[in-house]
Amino acid sequence: MTKGVRMNDWSQHITCDPEILVGKPAVRGTRLSVEHILSLFAAGWSVQEVLENYPTLDPGSLRAVFAFAAQAVRAHSPLSEPEAE
Image (cartoon, rainbow, N blue to C red; front, side, top):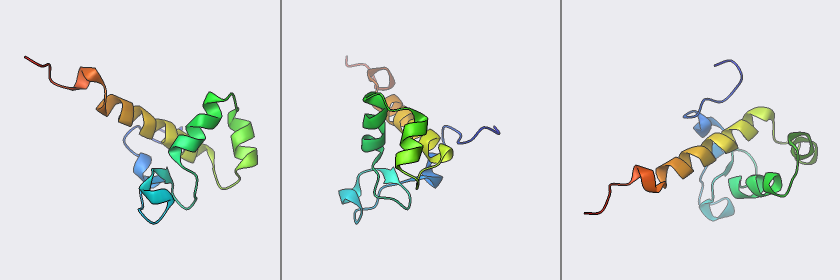
């Protein structure tokens, strides 16, 4: 894949360090949480606006945020849990 982060390759960009943001998933080398970045997009920010306002981010780190979120949702999906008998 030449366009950027593979779905399972977000760990190069996302970290969970108890010393940074109390261990919330964040973009490596920043104090920007995955939650905060996703909330910017939910509020209607464009990729360009995020990159302009947070120059420590790049397109690859944004793709990693989305890949991380997608994996987290998949892991907590009712479809991925065994059915109760």
